Length: 130
Image 1 (cartoon, rainbow, N blue to C red):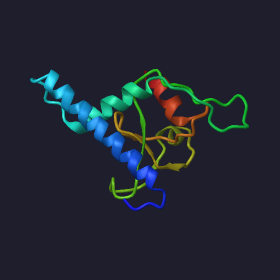
Image 2: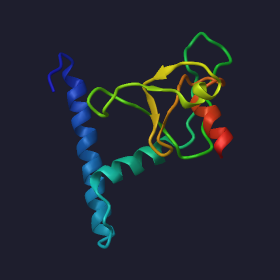
Image 3: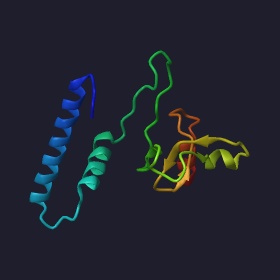
């Protein structure tokens, strides 16, 4: 990974090494575990994120990203990860509104708009389903 800011590379490397070392320690403490490193990364991320909430943009008072009461996470589909990069929002489609998005819920298997506000299709869809 080339970068003019070498400290980013060093920081990413050290974080990766520490996560791998934690995984090795976990596996030594749980010899019967079949967990793979990728699954360990996902578990670590969900445990660290938890129900974190922060302001969306400094300067806009009152807009906060609401923590979701469930374990579904929006995934932004990057180029090459799927057959198509964008999909039609399921929530907007039910309201007869045409909207395409890059955000996808892997647990539900649907495309949903994700803005981080109270009118967020991802949030509204899951509140209605849970």
